[in-house]
Length: 459
Image 1 (cartoon, rainbow, N blue to C red):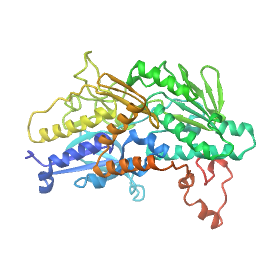
Image 2: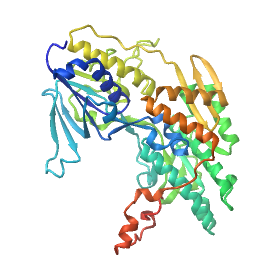
Image 3: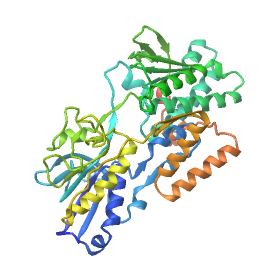
Image 4: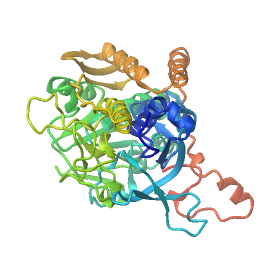
């Protein structure tokens, strides 16, 4: 039994937030029933996104609603608050939270009191002050961005098919991806595969007409799978007529022209930015200790260093890697560690409430898997390297085993089976982003003058 009533506040509904709350509601089932504990989860979205499936959702292999997990269904014994934590004052144990209702009620934020804090807001895209990036760049971190990017790519093929202007056609069929990590390479591989398949249904657009360009500032891509598999990936992408430009940076994308550091210029209507992430800005609005890089300074027991009743894990936390040979090493900010850290964090929080000794988080890196399109991939697992179909198959098996809930596992597996039996969908639903446009026009509204505001498309 817990020593005293505990109000637990979990900030973030991602990997760490959801799995920690899930662990807590299982371990504290009796205490929750008796009212001795309560768990509140503050999250900007009422669902957890399984990000490794975003490339397949963008390519149409998986329905977007099946890569998200509804938190209210999974965390049925927790209180879910859909909102943003804007600041935390741990000295007095309060968090300022804005919700959908605070603005209507005339309040800047709602103050939530807590006894134990689990801070897991995750990360946000790391952008640079590049001219035109804010206006024309497309991210790839949320399911909404994955859907929009799929619609956008198919829409560009429609534009190219219907125009007689060679400049417009060339820009529409040029796709620039910035960042050679998992997100960039997998998104590029899946979308190029999808677009090449879709081209067979266009009478005047061929796969050879499209330019796919990967821009990476360092001298290698996919560093997680090792140098050898990184070189293999570059070779495989280039065999598909994808330009892989290493040691190159994006200098500007203003006026829909991608200008690179080597002087090359590509007129394009598509710039996908996947060049890394940074800690969530909420961390800077707390009184908790941070590293020079802005991450939460944590111990190997997942407590916040030098602070009682505060816990952290995942992308937002700098957790010591006790399995590493070199001193001072930190665990990588990836899903593999986040899932395991969440379990240990939940167990340790329960141990702390019951006056029991805490566990140390220790997990040796098992390896990495990456998909490069249908039946193509690379993997390095426990020192073994896999390429092509075996790696792609392992990628699917691994992530199917990790996606939360049996419901989602069954739905994803069913969709994979059906996609193997039937043809791919090549429909763009860009009008979903402006669902009231047709009604506004029918009601006498003005048609948007700016082509970028066209309600029928996403570009």
